[in-house]
Image 1 (cartoon, rainbow, N blue to C red):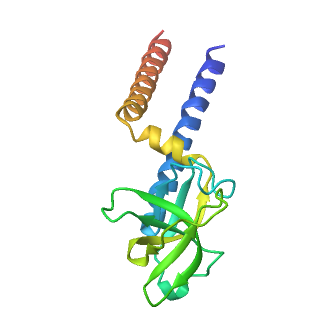
Image 2: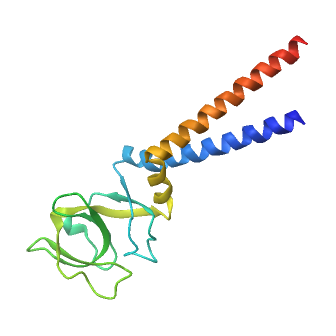
Length: 168
């Protein structure tokens, strides 16, 4: 009976740790390859890129943009907010792009300066942004820390009980 409990708790902790490692790899590994990740906060690109997704972008030159195909991530002038929209056309002379969210029937009212472009969306993971954003809060970090403290306490108790069993 005790062995089953040990195995279940070990499997649970191993699975939780594997999920955390997978999330860390999804967020930090692409940075090693020069790819940045961003959280999608709105549904402007649905259904193609759902709200809550993590998008991964690469740098792009204005001459490499493929209108109607490429989805770019832009920041506002202050760099405090960003949005992800599909490029509808490019004005090479003024270095601006006309964009449109896939969920919208009309293009954005004003062209966006290409200087505000952070990059082209390479790929995305639907809904992962919710998890990453939650774990990036104080509460999320506290829950992870508490989880590992409890796990450590359980392992210490197992070790003590096994040591007592061997002595007896």
